[in-house]
Image: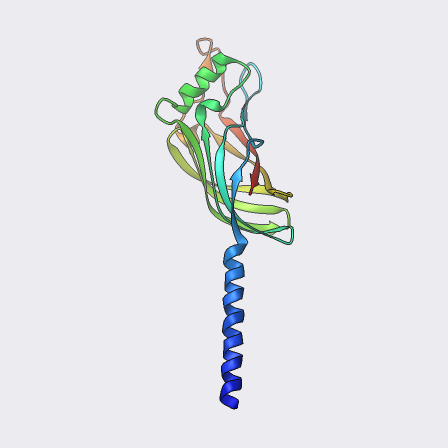
Length: 192
């Protein structure tokens, strides 16, 4: 009788452990970047401040959302075709694409290395940006909002042209010069 009780207890412990592990494994889900996601880069010049935008990124994220709360960001990758980033002036776009070396580097990429939860709506992301063929690791503070379809993620990074081996562009025979500092901004929606 004692052996049967012990066997029954072990069996239930095994079943409980199995279902516990299964629920953890299945809680991670893959989400896709939707078309409402936006990216921009902003900077300055001797003539005026400027901003270039794109809504053409693709990507995926492996997330754990439980009871309406984000509990884990396991993976996140974004690819943005460099020549989809546009200003309101074609001449500026042409100079930007030369600076980004888009003839050899068609995409701007981001790959998450790690994510650390700061509080319910703030995460510290560490990831690699690849711009103009050069890769650099940055920390990014991101604001998160769980939506009915998945997750909204917003944040920004300060970078410089030289961080990625680029020369800050000039125009009009050097009379218009672009400042070194840039701000990358993103507003991303990941949906099931």
